Length: 156
Image 1 (cartoon, rainbow, N blue to C red):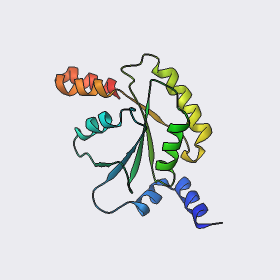
Image 2: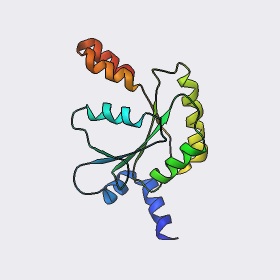
Image 3: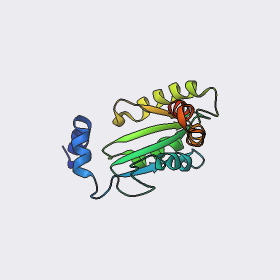
Image 4: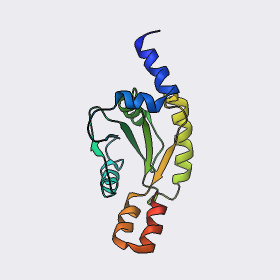
């Protein structure tokens, strides 16, 4: 068994321990990966507006890899390649599906994308694809109060 195989086994069976072992020192970092036009920038803007936001980077080592997909179309080879290059070897990979507020058929895309991820990225383990509406979240910040809180919950 090679050292890479051992690392894969440890990451699969103890992802939190593996992430702590390989985490960079300093404030938490989240590496954001996605194809052009997938909504990465808008998602990072909304996440940065939250309290205690970590540092978001496009390259380099990070505690978590956030891979962003768009709800307008199913995953393809390009998106899977981005996921593979950014997420392989990471302690924790989080997948987000942006644009749910702009695409009424996002649930169908979500189901198909989860199936594709389970088939083509088995190294992820159980797949969770978080649906997110960034423009709805931005409106929630503007509205504020109880109505803003409801919008924020609806935004994912």
